[in-house]
Length: 66
Image (cartoon, helix red, strand yellow):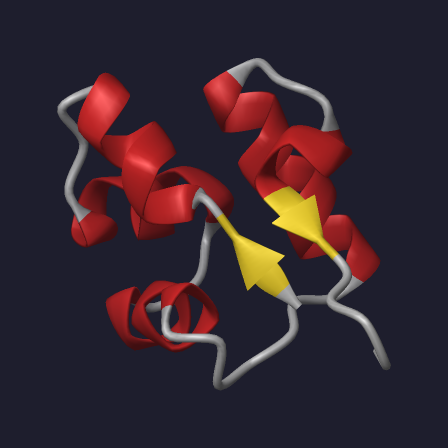
C-alpha cells in the first residue's frame, strides 16, 4: 500500500511526532507507515485522514497485487 502521509505532513508543517500525538500512536508507528513497512488499521487510517481533512483514498492507495 502506498501513502502520501509525508507529503500531507509537509503541507501542514507537521512532524512525525506531531501526527503521532494527534492520532495517539508512537512516532515509530508513523515512520513505519510512511516507509510502507506497516499497514495501519482502518481506525488509524481514518484518524490520519481526519487530521489532514482529506478522504482516505487521498492518502492511501492500494498497489497492484495488494
